[in-house]
Image (cartoon, rainbow, N blue to C red; front, side, top):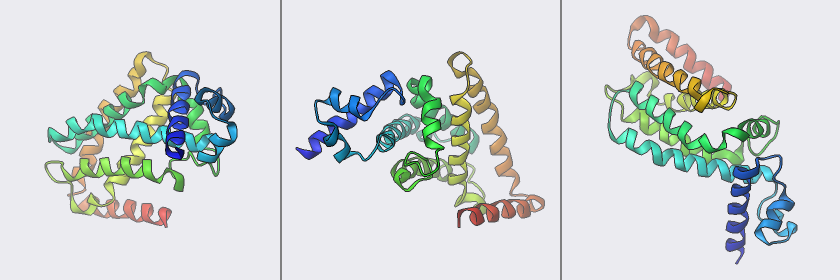
Length: 215
């Protein structure tokens, strides 16, 4: 019964987030719509931020599903990256009207909804695993010096693209799709250039900085 109630609260919250947005969806409203007490809703989810985590999980699962066709078709890093980023935009699309609310929640210090928080680790792992699959299957192969760290770097690129998308008021977020179309081949070229001895040192410096920031 507890699992059934948790699932009901979760599905109700995700529906209300889609219909009303984050700010207008209170824990009391979620409980009322689900037909449970507010205390029962809080028993299963400590805060609304934790329910946003469930939304992130759903969106990332949908992103992985949409991206599989792209990854199955092979291709070089640029084409795979462009396809995966477009699949992400398609997965996020229905939440665009409320995107700025979710960003405001995610950037709040200590928020469980931050993409970098411990609470976000399941959604983050799903996304980073997707980019790892992207990198591992690229042909020609990604230079070995970048292969381990590149999936996480591409995940950070996606976060940046998503932030741009949230504030993109063009029809159908056309400007974000233009950004993706130009950014993917640019990053692909930069990765290929790291094969050159003259740029290998710069690549090592970038990776060292990333590792230092993470430690």
